[in-house]
Image (cartoon, rainbow, N blue to C red):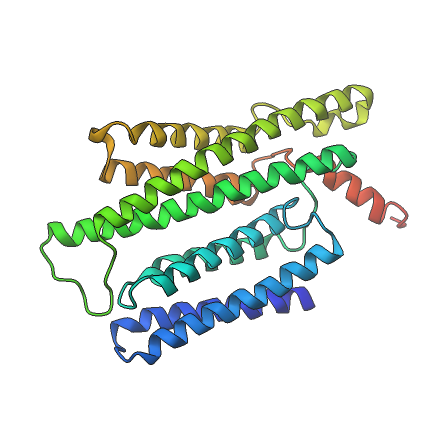
Amino acid sequence: MIDRLSILCFAGTYALALAAELARLVVRAPIRWYVATGLTALAWLVQTAYLANLALKEPMAPVSSAFGSLMLLSWIVALIGLYLIVRSPRQMAVGVFVLPLVLGLVVGAGLFAPRQAGWLDRDRTIRLWGAVHGVFLTGGAVFTCVAFFAGLMYLAQMRRLKAKRPPRTGLALPSLEQSERINRGAIAVAFPLLTFGLLIGVILSLATRNGASLDPGASAHVIRWTDPKVLSALGMWLVFAVLLHARFRPAMRGRSMMMLTIVAFGFLVFTWVGVEALRLGTAHGAVAAREHDSASGGARTP
């Protein structure tokens, strides 16, 4: 109950910060920027305390579960967004694009709060590499999010320029060059992180298969190569490979690159949230869930 109240606390503060950002459409006083920035910083600090407490209870929790990973991802995206808000000119509406993403990640994490089973928890070695796997994928997801909201700002600015509309009061956006530079830089960082994360995941899957051959009872929990999470993660990686290739082909830059970024972000959301939300029968994390249940509830009477 306390955990849920803590999540509601900083999620609500992020929502208030977003409302303050949206208020730029009607409120032009400088105090609005300070309120929005202060609320964002406050929410981030409360979330930091929550994650620190979570890590003290279970050191690998922030990277070894869907709940912890989404919460960590939202925390990092909020930190990057806060940095951009502070460093950008105050008339730029960076928070309008960043805060909905942060709030969506926090709400998505809240959906998994009752089920905090780790991804892979067979032994200490697999737990260690499972954490490394989670760190790399989380880092790749962070920069995917950065590329995504940079792409949204690019498309919004391009639409305004094509319509020859003047910038709306209180809703200034970065130039097309600035948004494209952020997008390309984020992609260049996200691709190797996702690549290493997926390679480690493949190695862990092979190790789990070897363990299942020694323990026939665990064979039902082996991750198949056709597992929905595996296929969606591979799809996301392929889109990023195309995006990285597009950096060297001028014909694929601009709007095409931003649309591909949105597709990659869609794969990310489907991999992290959609597979489990749609109950597509993934075995990702099933081994840890089984061992967690047997350790915590095995002594209970039916």
